[in-house]
Image (tube, rainbow, N blue to C red):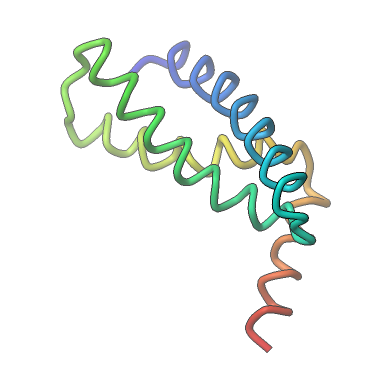
Length: 98
């Protein structure tokens, strides 16, 4: 996977992740959207990456697998747009475990 493809996928999938997060937030009245965004980023990032690999006939090698694994966190960071949101979701996870 090239850097251009990775950045393109992160950009497109971050937008998709943001749209799905807003839709879920409005439909289900979710109070912790940053945690929802992290969960959706995993699903959208990995499925979107696999879908792109299949469409472009990119072989599943170790290096492409690593890029695919890193795609979900990159999508989540792109969708949340900032350190304060990442800090907030870590706090939310801490609240949920108490």
